[in-house]
Length: 75
Image (cartoon, rainbow, N blue to C red; front, side, top):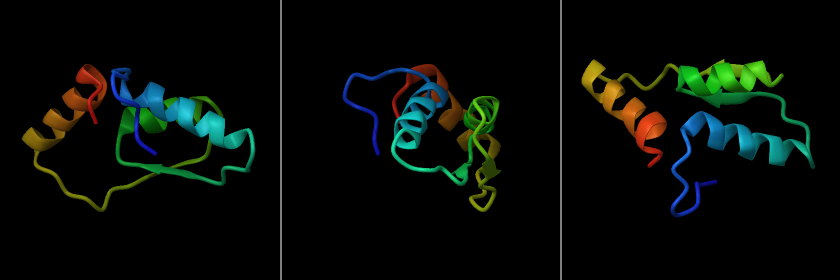
């Protein structure tokens, strides 16, 4: 699932909305993500989460991705 054109909410908000919508019709066993903010948000909402740690990124790449997801809302 991808965010709609023009949707600039932070990734954690978008993914929480998507997972809640999915959970209305099916059981969500676990949510896997590589973003600590997304995992914290979903965990706080009562979902079981698992950190995806298999994609190694340099600090600069990680910071750029964080800015894009959380600040710019463009991933």
